[in-house]
Amino acid sequence: MNAPQLQQWLHRRKQRLLIVLICGLVGVEFLESGMFVFAAAPIMRAIGAAPQEFALVQMAYAVGNMFMVATQQWMVRHFGYRRYLLLALLLFGLGDVGSALASNLPEMIVARLLQGMGGGAFFLSTRVLIPLLFSVPMRPLASRGFLLTIFGMGVMAPALAALLVGGGGWQWIFWVQLPIVVLLAAGVQRFMPRHLGKSIQPIRWSAIPVVLFLLAVGLVQWVFSEADHELLQRPDKLALVALAGVTLLGLFSLHQWRHDEPLLHLRDLTHPGFLAGMGLFATYYFIVNFNNYLFPQYAEHGLGLPVVTTGWLNSFSGGVTFVAVVLYSRYSARVANKRAMMMIGCLCMAVSAWWMASLPPDAPVAALYGPLAIKGLFGVLMILPVSALTWRALGDTHFAKGYQAKNVMRQMMISLASAVAAVALQNGRTAQLIRLPAGSGHLDMQAVFLAGQHLYLWIAAMAVAAAVVVAAQKQLR
Image (cartoon, rainbow, N blue to C red; front, side, top):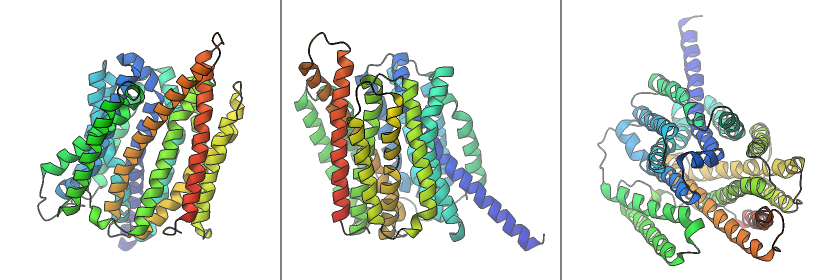
């Protein structure tokens, strides 16, 4: 092997190692999030937190996540990607240690805030880094690895969490990630270009947008976290806090529009195709996270399935999605009509939800495989075409800015969908308890089952409405 061939071989090897690094960074956050959701019940019992108090833990993670996403471009321009990601890994690792050692609610809140800050850097940065780190021939491979890692974690997280919680206790969902974090930090230090992303010009730091953003999202996230418990008891208080949060978000958006060096570059994100894509992204995130909240409640408390079984069912649906991603990556280029693909994805979700709403109360586990398999197609057929068309409409120049705004919206929709689903399920359960005859056996289970079926019909209606919107919109084709 002569010198040019050796140099070319070393370059290809480094590019492949960078792909592994990118996949590891995005994968660790999705793995952690999936396992934490699964282990929420034993964690609540261990730290002595009621569901209302535990909502503050989820709020802390969301606020930390959005803070890191919003400040990403400022920090990268000041520190560069290498030091920014090392800082994020440090915060994420500290959050892991703090969560595993937490014995009460305040300790868990602080730990999850740190972990949210660390995790918020990974999803955004890794996707933005793909066109920066890889040559044109290597980008498709990096993008496929990125996608397969995300959807692969949907398969692995529930099953791994079930094994860890059952075998060694809930703390192991955090301990198991520490070696991964250390390896990723070593990889970032070794392979990430030192000055990548760092600006030559000094960054003009400003506390005003950061404070406005934190106050706004903090208030809104508090409303989401408290909605399940406070809506009926103190609707006036909740409405005032929500109004304050929305008003501050409006002021923050106005400030960002006028600012020369904003956190979020709103003035550059007015392309009609991008706005249409953001609307479809928001629709997708709301539907899928509404369903993600509902399914374990319906399965465990409505159908009476064990927690471990519910986890494996989630992994089965994730496995269907993973296979569909592989097939999509290979054959999607042959499908010219991406809008038809998005409509089919929405209709798959509608059929899955209608099927779930039609199950009898004594349905066996096997009866869930069909609707869960069909639901597994929704994420692929809906979101992947939307993603490709949205970023094509925005272009490479503003890609990083658009992806940053999209990730803030993603976290907001996750919280909103979970809050709406929690309130709707609680109200539905209460209404069914009033209607059901007294003395009936397993009264609460029947109430949750009937309320869950009603909400699955909601999901079916939302998915059909989404299909209509996809058919009507003309910006993304």
